[in-house]
Image (cartoon, rainbow, N blue to C red; front, side, top):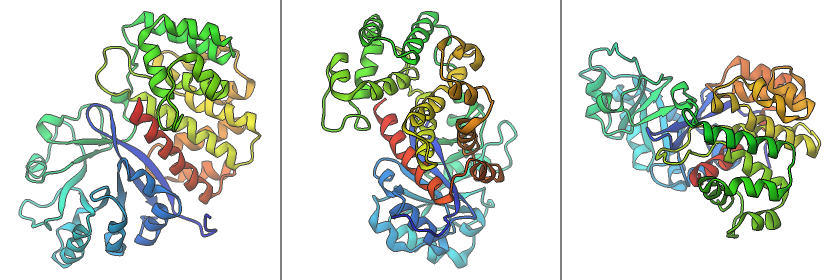
Length: 390
């Protein structure tokens, strides 16, 4: 049961490697998390479940964290991030050593002075990539420590080879380039599929279209067999997916399929987990503000379709115009507001550090702080499952 005490305002941002795969989540809070708030998020709100799959980089005051917390999580999956000034303070070394001995990883934010002595447990740095104008000692510390080093607030100009970054955080423009660029055949096929899904076309027609592209067929069966969709079941055909799992869920998987990696692409799709996170978070928020069941589906669709302009490289209004979507979905996607538009504003405001804009959007959408915390962690947990199978 969620306590009535108001938790800090949090956000969860993806941390990816240079193959676009999510490797961790960046947890930030306003005010900065202390040990009590972190433990509550892990245990009461279910964040610890994600740590079974990905690391969690938690921006926290390390002095307030109980080392016993590390014994309850897989070793190294909880990464405590804190200002570099703490790491270079000899008076804090014993405290940091105790946390590291309890199987927590330590990440300092910023660059230490060239002559600084760090505790042995501080093995990684989180810094804003300066691009071409590197300060003195920029690369030296990144080479000296084993990492993984995290680039914060970066652009697509991050150089993993020279600067020795391993991870990048956030929803980066460079990662979100259209996945169908230069492939008009795939673009046309997916636009037809999108239209059929949006208008609830006959299942046989959808199946026939997907069978024209073996890659789409493969990706669909891979998605529906993921633990996020059908635990304990193995689905071997499109018809079986409809019979066992229902049309409502199938439509959602087809929406996700729009963002699957194109044929021949060896890196993960940067858009699929982003779209999944938006869609699931929209649905969770619609549930928590008391919207009827039909609106839950519409909320999911708004979140999923909100990245179609990035996927296809065309204005969103042009893409959805021929799809005959419901008025509330169109209103939200075109910036017209409404209940779903208010929830989408919350989701978009959450794609960064906690901010006044996010707090205001939550109030405007009538979302309580505890409900937001529960929703964003649940959505991240579901997205991690989806991304791991896609």
